[in-house]
Amino acid sequence: MAKVTYIEHSGKEHVLDLAPGTTIMEGAVKNRIPGIDADCGGACACATCHVFVDADWIEKTGKLGSMEESMLDFAEGITPLSRLSCQISMTPELDGIIVRLPAAQH
Image (cartoon, rainbow, N blue to C red):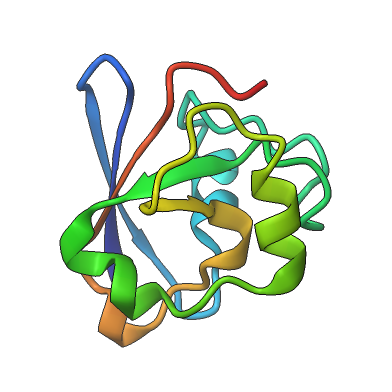
């Protein structure tokens, strides 16, 4: 299991242990973490699972794929720390990762 901390836009924190291979989006949806809509169910087709990965962790999440990069164009307020949580699968190396949720997923 690997720990992930979700921080809502309001500052409220949710800490979960996720099995390796589980995406950050799947963990949020299954545990009803508010702020990740995941309209496409994790198919990298909607950008409603946009998160901001804390700077200390962004390099460990890997490079953006071309689909993810294209989908992020539809997210509001993207930054160099923006990722789609459906594209980040938990690994032992990501144990302790922190992601922040945007104000809205539109």
